[in-house]
Length: 111
Image 1 (cartoon, helix red, strand yellow):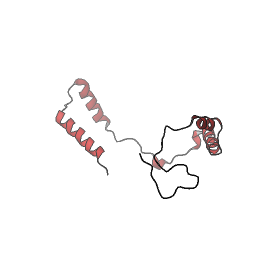
Image 2: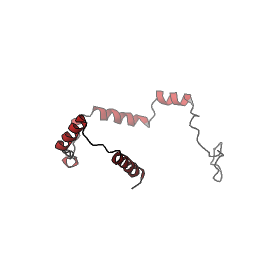
Image 3: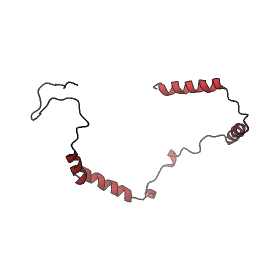
Image 4: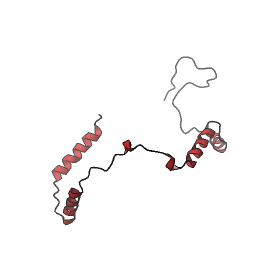
């Protein structure tokens, strides 16, 4: 990919702006940054250790966010389960295919 030029180069720039090479990382900088935490990573590690020591019971949730029990008809589920076990549950390939196509269309369209 050719370099992208936007007017003059900034002071101290050694090459034109271009695509970033992800495999050009230098191992010496990766080892040095992993061995010695910098000032930017020190607060994050302090926060992580503070959060880890906080008991989970201290977090309170609102009862308004509780969705409750899912709307499942237990009788209907048992009827369908028994029919499947007995082999009497009606499977119509055309209905299964139509449902699969409809689900695919619903997932592929953006709202």
